[in-house]
Length: 421
Image 1 (cartoon, one colour):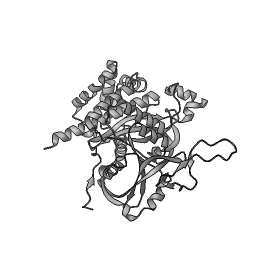
Image 2 (tube, rainbow, N blue to C red; image 1 turned 90 degrees about the vertical axis):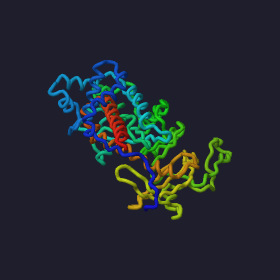
Image 3 (cartoon, rainbow, N blue to C red; image 1 turned 45 degrees about the horizontal axis):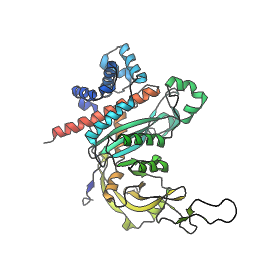
Image 4 (cartoon, rainbow, N blue to C red; image 1 turned 45 degrees about the vertical axis):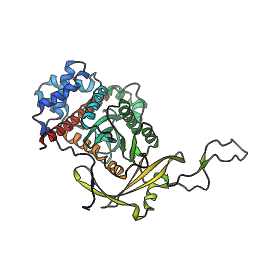
């Protein structure tokens, strides 16, 4: 395979909190960027302390062990920090909007990729906001957990998280049995049920409207890619989606003719177009892949995370997507097949038909950064260590974890520049 040129994706984040113990002054300077968003001096103090705690080398980064490490056995300090995170009147959205400008300065690229994915947090008991016995991706099985939806950003300069939403199951919002828990967790009275794709779109739309992070693509797994309404919204936001889709997703290889059926003379006169009777039926994307000749496939070498370059076979087919049993947008079906176990990945992409295939191959390898963000967040930054039950506390904690992760990314970029000959 040495004749294949490696297609790069994003550099690996390999800096850990242990590497930056001596950079407290740099952390203070970084925190100062966000200080004006906190309205009170004590909020500025506690937010910097929490960031520092998330970057400590501790086995568990809930509030008490972090505060014991930084302030000693000061129960008042522990209570004050708990109040700051769980109930503090400071705005996550303002902090994150400020962060997006910094991320663009550090990592921004006109071909940047937004990445949408979920991450779950196993929890004990039934009192934490939104907790439910549901599928937990972290454990790979159904378990008691909270479910989050996250948006990340990746470019040739690096990657980090941008935003977060908590998925709240419908019964938490609508059923009277949850009334006391809603009140105890501070669930907003005007909160309505939103699916995970809807939460994802809310983040994408907010980033797109803010216009502070340069981006061209949106990558997602099939949990989001199966939602055609979401894909159409992404296209309407002038983004190119690169969405993994289930193998049973249907497409037409040749766009079928449509017409309004002739009126039989009985009943209501038809007004809606239908696919004409003699048109070919749509095929599943798996069937399209199986029907391609060997000559349609080419091997590509793509760099994906810490595993190093991976060789896979790719094929590309222009198809018509299906929308409400009618032909929808013209898109590219991108097929990726593993050389080791023949696993097939199927993607739909609304980028222009003449886009170079190399860019499609590269974008197929741009989902791993968000998985690495979750891994770093949970293993190094206490992302899942919180012992906070409230709605506000969950969002505050995730905002500060995202700030800590972006700090690691910034420091790694600066250190590598400094160390270059």
